[in-house]
Length: 365
Image (tube, rainbow, N blue to C red; front, top):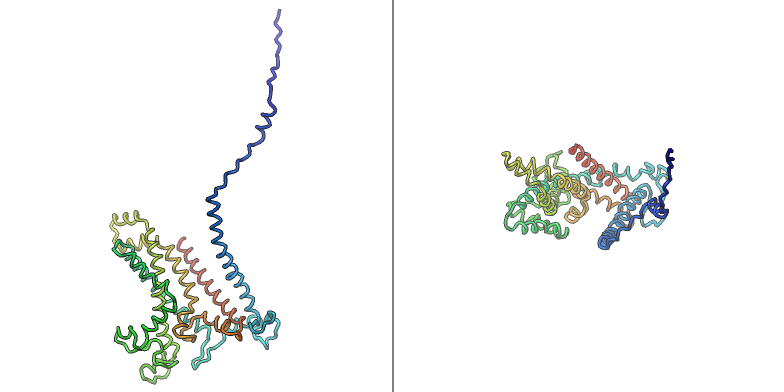
């Protein structure tokens, strides 16, 4: 008798609740709030918000408003609505909407030696920037000296940084005493030279200094004679005042130079000069680049030093003085004209900064 094979289906009990729980992904647990980190973030934003608000209001919004004003006839004492120059005929404002910008490139100085006013003031500003490479070289030299393990190094750092925290007015009047006709500089070098006003006249020339009457001499123009020596005083003062801040940055940069690379170079037989150019300088490049960019931006905005020493004049004042003279000096001034002068300066600074970043990108490539 054949056995009948029967297949039985065994039913396994399934817990439906367990299946449901497995099909639903578990909820992520909330991370506990780090109270210390939250407090740090709140304090950080509390300190940043005033800077952000000030930058937006006094930089971006002010820039847009100044740009708009430069195309109008706005004057503070009028108290009227803005009227764009394009709405007037060319007889009233020759050049249309760009009338004030045309004035920047065409207005002449009212002196015995007429020249383009904006060009003269801009040349003064660029001339003062001669002090930038001088200051960079001197600050690098002093920073290298201070970075060595010598006694009293911190004392020297403080002494060199003091001019940076000193009032600009006090520095200016100190140099006025130093460079006057009977000042320390003349006595030190045995000179009888009035650096600040030369012969005491408002328009000293090379001929008047030498007692000659040569016609057509290059230095017969007060702008190139009296202005030249007075600008030299400004350069010396600017270099001295800004030396300390640049030294501190270089000292900080030198502390981050890779010592292992320097030791490897010494083992390979490199001398001190080769190590400085091949090892130290590449590591210092970010600091050097930062110093140059900020120095150029600051140099293009020089204003107080020439005005405090020599008052407003076309022989020594920087370009920023024109913004003050035509935009802010009295209620009768045209704020629209001053805004146009400011826009031209903004474009120049922007172009110089972009050029420096372009050179930086080429060096990195």
